[in-house]
Length: 117
Image (cartoon, rainbow, N blue to C red):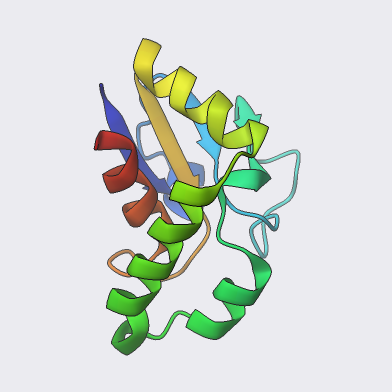
């Protein structure tokens, strides 16, 4: 299983991606034109719920608790997008694309860790 994580804005600047590119945000990344970013697939259903995302607010102090809550959401999910993602990661390399500004405290990190388990 080969899972890479990349910030959307870095990919637009030329950062390399690997395998299938999958946008894992519920909302389209701020400031990015849809013509400029063409992920292979956009799986909104794997992102944290709106309520959890708003509670977290990208506050690094809340990241540990956010990780726990998001992992619980993933464990309880029966969303087809999550099924699609699990299937994709089991068959070929993927790059999870995210739009958050913080490279160290974002849901893509938690999602990749969950997928590897």
